[in-house]
Picture (spheres, rainbow, N blue to C red):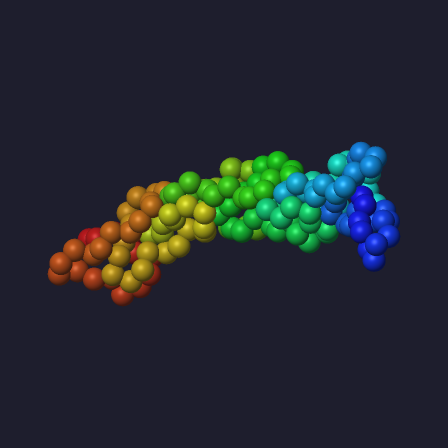
Length: 155
């Protein structure tokens, strides 16, 4: 690429995270989100490496693999070069970071719930869930209470 520096025109190398595949280019192209490159003076988009499955990056022009962050519990990225992780559906949660499949999303057990995109959480004190894969916990009815988290019945 070309730049004006103190009235002299010089060719500048493309920085890490970018490339120029055309001669006489006036700018470098950044690696797409979900990809990164530590190479300088790159001449092809092939120098941009994919974030691996289980990780994602929404950063364009990323310069290192560290821009690819592991999916949080309750999220997954099935393929390489994803720009964001996909949330488990409501009523399901995941326990591990870096999950690569929707199969890592498992139904919440009675006494817990998930609104999606997070691990299953126990029902709060005073609330219960008697069904698997709950998306919320119901309030204990009048005249009843729960002293602990994770109540599974209003009886």
